[in-house]
Length: 562
Picture 1 (tube, rainbow, N blue to C red):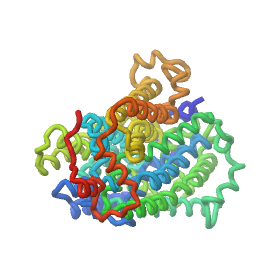
Picture 2: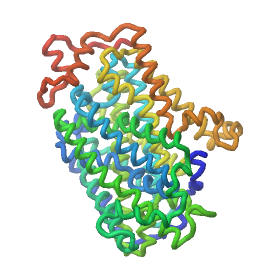
Picture 3: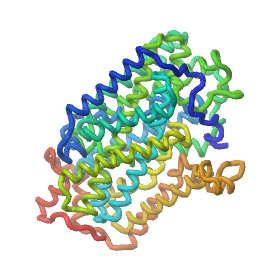
Picture 4: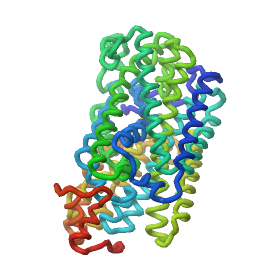
């Protein structure tokens, strides 16, 4: 049994949630959204440096808060507790995967990426492997990740929005996405980063306040709900507490592994290291970011336990018939505050935190996607003579078009918030993580190896999605599936869509290494840059490894080999 099959069907409207217009929460959320727009206007940008990397002017604490907000999306704020509530032990794979990935980032990638010193993740791939084809594949993968990931955020914003404003799901998704696209098109990375710091404060205060008050009022906890919730596990259903009852060990491991390597391959996470002035700031901002993230991640299981118990008392068995729906699970954080009979304004505060989390992550994804389109595809490949005005125009047009596509798709989302995000992680772990890791730590990785590896990763991801996810939308594919819901059950067992990276990423590593060994070594200039990225030799602020190598040898960049 897969975890997806074990979950209740994802209905769009959460029946148990009091979805009606509420005056005080509406004022709070409206004021919050107005604040985001105002910050975006104050820190609006007029050049590409500000749009893509915030002028490399962000400090470590502020960047750490931005990393936290950038990372803690609706999937973390809402989806993680939802997955634990609906699938119990399996949901812990998300806590383990998303947290562990940051340790690998801190140790192996953060400072090295900053030393390489580019604007975007595809920029790194294109210059490291001296290939416009590799740059284009990385840029298109970045845009695809932004699309898949953002659909989950839009769904989360829509569900929380109907609790605050009432109305219908469609209106809320369109309204929230319009505000998000509006301030992003205006402010770029600089305004988005300033907003992320504010959004982090809002979301963590709202989440922790909600947890502590629900725990205290419900009689579950007093001073440390993150630990005290363990005392109530015996009261919860076996679906919540028994290991691997809603997904076997392999699926648990595959999900956790995909989330770990996906964390290290997400372009909107990696680009945060380009917004700071030095490698030291990059390392410390990662430490701060991990600390801020853990504040929420260590609290999510407790919120899920409280919400599940309150749901069982007030509505019925979450795992019975009809049980807790997918939509109810996706708003379990807000629902728990409502079921604990907390004041309406307080529930509104918890809901506002969910919206702030979703908007912050969508901002990071859209900036990464727009820079991939404008900088890596349009300027680097199509029009090298593009003016800054033309680049800004293409970047802002990308944000608007991507926003429209995400909005339309989110009106009929294919899965729960957390599952949608996990598909994006699987893609990042299969295609980009191997290129980042090998590109920084093995100097003999060459263009041919990178192209073969990225192509293999894309093939595995599309095959897994086609096999297990698309049949729900395409009748011809659906007719080919059996009881498991997959076209080829054996392939789904080895490469589950939500965790395809466990078996797929080692294959991509092997293909990349084998092809690199079988073909010509990369130029000596590239090898020197790679060595400089993890050299003990200190580098100046705002300096890149490429500049250091050019100063020492007189060798400068060359045109792509393809």
